[in-house]
Length: 78
Image (cartoon, rainbow, N blue to C red; front, side, top):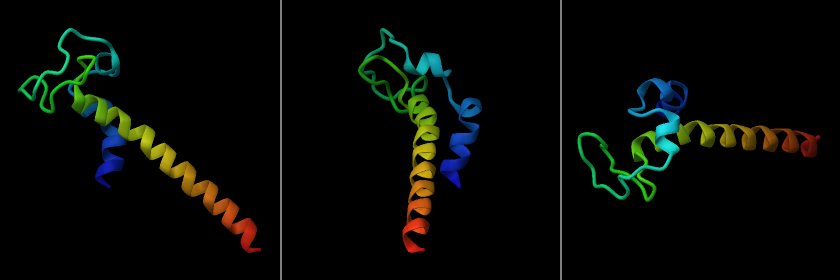
């Protein structure tokens, strides 16, 4: 439920917008700080925001793979 909540409410709880989280910044490889709780990555993007926005993509991939396996398994089981 936590992952689903993060995926659904991510845009409202992320400290930075999607554009700010994926754009290039001058603050590359900064350690955790009050401004960036998990630090930044090689391009200077906020790691916490990237994780929050990435959760929705992983959730969609997981649901699609379960749906496809359900359809294929049902077809093969008949």
